[in-house]
Length: 158
Image (cartoon, rainbow, N blue to C red; front, top):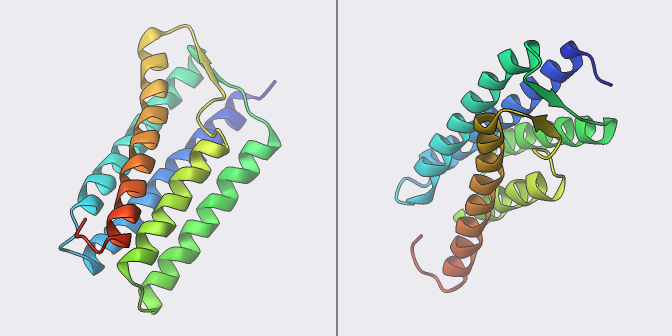
């Protein structure tokens, strides 16, 4: 059983993951201002960060419990470091839109494949809806990015 402090730390790490994604997507938006996908993704990731931070008081009062394991913690930390490296790379190197979309897709895929939002449990229906929405939004992001990859293959503007 995880302590309250351990649960909070993990949720904070998840919020940091969302924050780093927002930074990366914001950088891509700056590099590719004619592309419509980035502003929406930036706002979505900021929204997810906010939702996660709102969970912390519910952990403190016992309304929600975060079941996690070391693999989940490691996955989140590895993803955060990977995103930070990609931010540095995008700042220092010339990248093309195809690479940016592919990188974004890889991060959204990893979040879903690693099930980083599936270790919560709560009796509160509002909390459950929020957690379900995090997963659903990530699926929508992945779908949009997959469509963007296909569009780029056809040399259409996304």
